[in-house]
Amino acid sequence: MFSAQTYVDRRKGLREQLDTGLILLLGNNDVGMNYIGNTFRYRQDSNFLYYVGIDHTGMATIIDLDEGTETLFGNDFSIDDIVWMGPQPTTAELGAKAGLSETKPLSELEAAVKKAKSAGRKVHYLPPYRHDNMIKLHQWLDIPFSDLKAQASEELIKGVVAQRSYKSDEEIVEMEKAVATTGAMHIAAMKVAKEGQTEANLTGIVHGIAVSMGGELSYPVILTKDGQTLHNHYHGNILKKGEMVLGDFGAETGMHYAGDITRTFPVGKKFTSKQKDIYQIVLDCEVDSIKACKPGVTYQEIHLNAAKMLAEGLKSLGLMNGNMDDAVAAGAHALFFPHGLGHMIGLDVHDMEDLGEDYVGYSDTVKRSDQFGTAYLRLGRELESGFVLTVEPGIYFIPELIEQWSAEGKFKEFINYDKVIANKGFGGVRIEDNVLITDNGPRILGPPIPKTIDEVEAIRRG
Ligand code: GLY
Ligand code: MN
Ligand code: MN
Image (cartoon, rainbow, N blue to C red; front, side):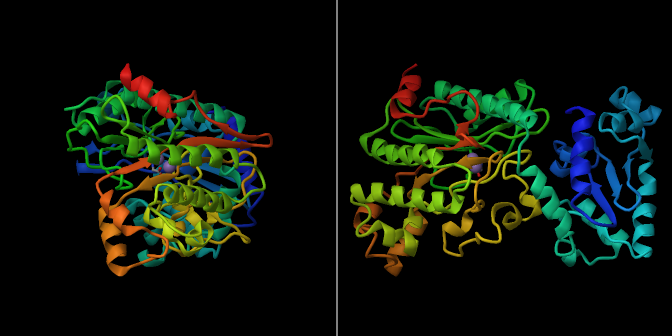
């Protein structure tokens, strides 16, 4: 945890943004995997981590905006619990670490929420995503399940986004750690990958590094020869020379700050010349897009410029034709680049996605596009100093999409289908880094991870 003062200050900052009522912050609880005693890996809710920091199951906090009180709810461990789980801190000890001096048993939470509701007071809660917390909100606030997200407090959502979007110096230290561990995972993958190895074997190695460095995965590992499938979690293939490995994985630190890096490298010692051509287009786009990340520029604009750069590169290889400004305006580039350039990152890999992407990534002046491809851009708003985001362009040859678009003759004025179809088995290339926006420009977090063709081939040669 950070010092208690950090959490005190964050809650004060939140209180100042809201008017009246209660703020209810529900922590996450253990979830049984196949029975209640055999749980999934425990992950605390990121909003709870941000405002309270306590990384334990079965906790909640109420901030009473009218009375100015803050209460931590939790259960002390019984001697039976301690026999099985070892000595455990009391709720009061945990509260002290978060600057919360008032603590109550968890059994009193329901009555406190119901009392506020029956007095006609507003209970601000964030959009729930865990079913056990949904059941509680439904029962305590008498809100239909189907309405729970819609009735979440917009005031509270906006207040949280206004704080969590700007990373403090102590958060940046954690994020640097996350990216350093993530970098060690990627360098290990590039060093040890070999022909005949399963994707699962390499996945186990990178996961082990995250754990061995005191963290965990920040999201399920994408490590595949089929990089054209954007979030490919299948690890059953055996790597063959001539193929590329697309590895998109990262660690979160013990305090749960995330890294999210992608590298693409050949299974053999060298890229083929076709792989080099595509790789260099993606790399140039990534490097230039990072340079463009400055306060005052919208990420939507940087995304569209990236799409244009990729399209120009594809045109130079004869895969696209015509005017690339027009092609990008029409959305033709999305055959090869069907996702957004990046997203905010912090305590979540897609930071604050639970609060609603548009609250986090868009603003009154920058609205989400509804065009296929650009619609997936999670972050479009004007960049500000203190934001941390990912920059992750890619080029993919997705056989099913190519077949569908070519059968429809879609954008045939911009796409050279004969040549694209000939490349259907190419796979995909994505390159991703994590970038802090400062008044002096962009800063890539973490130590350098091989990225140029020469650097990648050098590490593959050993
Ligand atoms: N790791 C998922 C993403 O890049 O957004
Ligand atoms: Mn990623
Ligand atoms: Mn990402």
